[in-house]
Length: 147
Image (cartoon, rainbow, N blue to C red):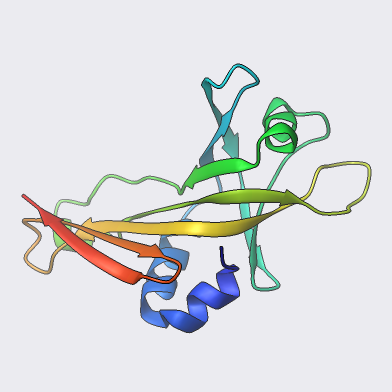
């Protein structure tokens, strides 16, 4: 597990591209696990501050209760269709890990994400192949390409 600060220090160029994709728009999608183990998809916001990732949650939200019971989480950043010139697409970012509840005010729940994986998906320079870059703690970034 790692903090965003640690990921950024280890792979700064990769982290900068991921951060740009995450901050393109405000609303993201978060996956948690319900009590019966089935998946739940919720909207969320993601704050990048103090070297950490902080998803948003209102008090007693179902996603917060999911995370208090089982901290496994995945967040998919804002999506955007590639423009007419696909080389102009900045890509999409995803992060997964564990949500750690931290003390906060009574108006909301506060979770810090301990990161297991960061994925950045984009097009190659020619705009004709999908490039998937995946960072894992202890392994660094692995790159895969698909047609």
